[in-house]
Length: 417
Image (cartoon, rainbow, N blue to C red):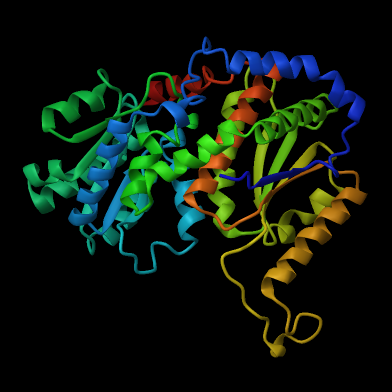
């Protein structure tokens, strides 16, 4: 499969000599990542070593889910949720829950503690045939625990306990934890969160692939895309180059990275990138703060700051070169828009913003996705950014795969409960 992710550093402002000076650091980071000795790096070889029997089980479960329901509620938070939602919205668009689809629609719960959100969701689900996919390594995280309890009770009231159990699918630890115990006791069909892969790197495990398969996508196509990325040395060199560039800009005082796209379908992919980079790098009083903006809408709220505000950031543009469709601007719009392709107008916005920001001295990374979004392309993108993030964290001198600081707020929250 051809590499379809192009990286443009021409507007990054990076000094070639500085880039060259990072060569040894980049080499050491890569050696660690590919050594097979580092904890939680099971995702590195996953595209080539994944369990084919597990993949068959995912396919069979997806077929069963499609027969059982019109709505699959994915219950999870952070790495148990963002990757699947990012891929789903990239592949189905902004209105997947409003348009008719042959496969079950995905709904998402357990990523907040809002009673209003979950009450409204349950009202929507009253008009659907429902299955649940609960994703949690431990089964004790507050947000998915609350959502699962609410939705499970509603399922039992509607279908009875036995039928409800047949409609619940658990993705959890192989042998321990509250959810594993419940899945075994109640007979939920279950899948394993691998021990050697952390949540934010788990998109290409059952955590992401079971919901995506249920939504009608071939799970192995995502892995094929990731495998193509893994085997493409040019693309992996670009991932390392991106990691080097981020570290150089960080040393220059660029403490914020703004992920931005001009297609709304990319919004949740940027949210996944926020967790991936933020949780991997933000420790030991180090790290680049990740933010995301959706253009052109956010230009009307943040454009002034980006152009003339505190110069503490750089921008990473996710650019879809061949959008799925196009429209022509009607004549009633008047000049200069009348008769133009909407995609051409969007392209003019992208190029205009990039030119204005470059003149203002803002470093820019541009990633061009050179074909229509597909499961293979999503797999390539996921693997590319996972690799770049891990390398960048190693270069920064932090451990990419833990998140000890997360426990601090959880302890305080538990005390208040």
